[in-house]
Image: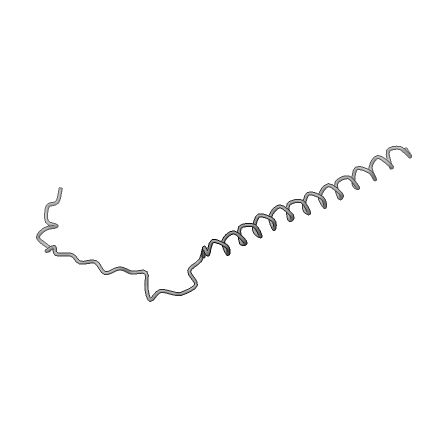
Length: 74
């Protein structure tokens, strides 16, 4: 009975510690990758997002067709 209790305590402690260490390692890897990407982008002068807004993304389309061109297409 005493051994089962200790085993249960160590099992929960193992889950808590492994979750904490995994989270810390994941944060470390993520922030290292983001920081390195940011540093290289600043060195190379690369901007990933356009900060200046365009007037519009629509483009003018010049069509020289008539309604008769669409009659009996198939």
